[in-house]
Length: 386
Figure (cartoon, rainbow, N blue to C red):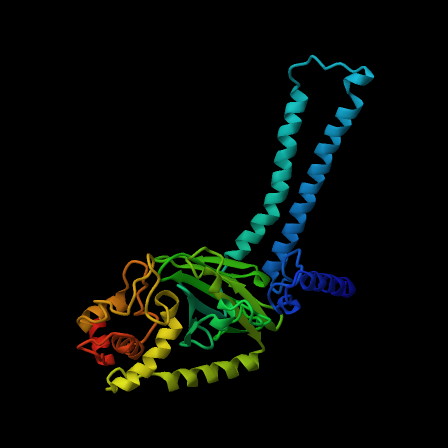
């Protein structure tokens, strides 16, 4: 098996070189897709194993039906052709045949439905979870909130970590995990039942990890759930598999499955990190401090739609450079950023008061903008939330 895989990789690499494409573009991604992968990813949960077994069972049943039906058909065509003296039968109906072609498919369907139903029921059993994580889909990132179990209270956003230059410049060498790497992966302990609660704050997304056998839609205004119990330590990758907008391809999912001891260490470190980053909404910032912080917030959350130069995307997203909202009363811009409008999602659940104040201050002082009210303090955002 290993030799065959190496030969496949060498063959594809040679083909790429012959075509003038870089051989480094073809790599396996641990926990993700593999070179020349023809089947499912190796399962690491019981549900994924059952899904894989069902897949093979259905293929075998379909193959048997295919061989039986076409075997009888071709046998009849060849053995009962006119050229060897056969004549068409004159009967119009046969009760035996009609019963057979009703009963046999029914038995086949029952044989396929029983194991499939057992797996579907198991997929929906989210009871007695050791850990509950809320997953919020948003254009175009994931938000994670640890609701129950060890790590309760941890919250973070997970963004695509592939540098934007690699995406826009085809001449640059790509990372081994190009477009399926994130800045903040989900971390869970091995052999623990993890309940995933999904929702979205803008459009429909779908949280999917093939190696776990998990695919659950995240729908605005609705709460759905699923679960997994990873039985092997490692890194596992997935993506949003619901067409959610122009940057749909840039919403990867990464889950690190670690030992119990490593999970406890991660929880402690994450909580310390969150405490260090916590912002006091009553603090008064200088305009330069807010602009510096706001530029980072803008680059992480706004640049995809409004561009780094603030010019927007004509016909899709408005320009912020010269915008009457950005240059107008700050209360109007605060309300817009908090609550969203049209394709713009509400940011009140994703950014804190300081981050919103900073990004608004940055846009009011960036490019050609010279707003009269050029600074917004976190306290103003806090007051606008009420």
